[in-house]
Length: 59
Image (tube, rainbow, N blue to C red; front, side, top):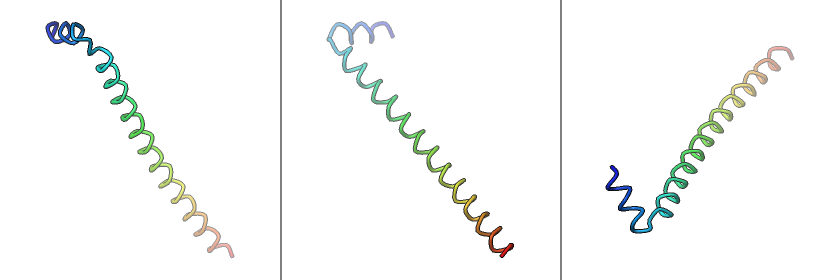
């Protein structure tokens, strides 16, 4: 593993490695945010359906 790290540092690709790690982290964060947004939309839809059912019963 040290040989790989030394090779990356010697070739000056440390910036590319940092950029790759940043991109992977940002993509993972975006995927997690989209997953949470979809879950929130499902919960809101459930709430609206329940509210409509309540209103229909008490008309």
